[in-house]
Amino acid sequence: QKRERFEGDPNQTELPFEVEPLAVEQQQEETKQKIEYTRKRPNHKGRAKLPQHLPVQEIEIYPEGDLSEMVCIGKEIAEELECEPAKFYIKRFIRYKYTPKNGDGVRIGELPERVIDRGIPGAGLLAMILTGKYQDHLPLYRQKQIFARENIQIASSTIEGWTKESLIKLEPLYEQLVFDTKAKGYLQVDETPIKVLDSDKKGAAHQGWYWVYHCPLDRTVLFDYNPSRAGHVPKSMLDNFKGYLQTDGYAAYDKYGEKKDITHLACWAHARREFEKALQNDRPRAEKALLMIQGLYKIERKAKEENLSPQQIKELRLRDSLDIINDMGKWIFEEIKNTLPKSQIGKAMAYTYARWDALSAYLHDGSLQIDNNLVENAIRPVALGRKNWLFAGSHEAAQRSAMIYSFFAICKKHEVNPYQWLKHTLLNIASINHKNIKDLYPQNYKQIIDKSNM
Image (cartoon, rainbow, N blue to C red; front, side):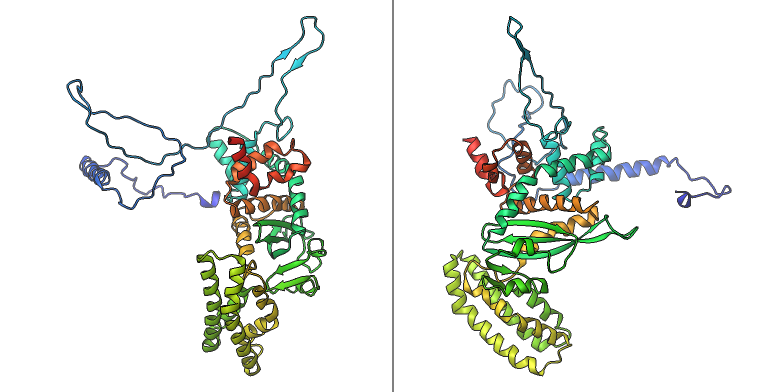
């Protein structure tokens, strides 16, 4: 820009662009010593092991000179991890046509199913773009720069169109996920904001929300976008819900927790945060509460380390956790009477006391979680992504993003490569029988691939 241009003083002495020969020689000697030092430096003994599943390129190196009168007595092997940038290539389908000798009709090889009808991107390229944006938080304009470095010029509008069309292909699978999520018997729910350009106010972004439903039992995640955070939003998901519902302290869930078919679970992590805030206000009592909560988490850690069954976890909690919870409940009941309600320690006690039954409800079943951290972990990629791409272009785009966030979150929980799953799904979703569409869920991907490799 003009304001960044530097206009030099015409009377200023010119810089000496030619360096003196002596200085050049000294620099070359220093560079030589540096190279020799780094070359001879010993390898670190504790270096990471190389992955065993990768292909190996072997490079054989023989001593220089005549070896005809010498005998090989062994070999030494050194390995390094190497890579090549993404490989772009053109997939050309050549369909041969045949006709009977009498000229009656024509037969031609059938073109495989394509993700975008008559479009040029293959499933692998589309999977790379979506994984880059929603998993690795690379905005589309940065991916366009990557293509440009390979001398592949693609308009921004074209890449945006490909992204939209790919996400639309996932709609049937997402609708099935919504249906299945509504039938779960244990859900953790949380919300996270997202800015959307579609706003009534000129020049302002709308504050939309992802409502996230996580089922800890089968590790599935559903992101559902809504422009609002009002209490009526989860109605479509939770109106017919029966079972355990775990949430933070947001009041929108209270009316669902009061239903007779729902057991409302609260989150001990949120209760702990309230007491952490009170450390500056009333350290002795805040520390006492935090030590008791720490005892509860120590029991949870023990159950995880010993890989206990749900029944064993329940027995452990009733034996050890119940005493801590009873002691803490009696202590808060007595202390809250002598605490200023508007002080931070008073707020922490009031938060915990008001949700005491919901905080204790995880003792009912060993399959239940002590907190809502698992659903918060599923939300984290959205928080990372919005720092890079900042906003969604419209409410419809935000909902399409919710679909891919759902499936990538499930991939993470089931340790499935999101790129490989997405490529497989884009290739097969148009041709799969609707009765078998659940086969395309990320949690079923490994089974499908194992069967195909048998």
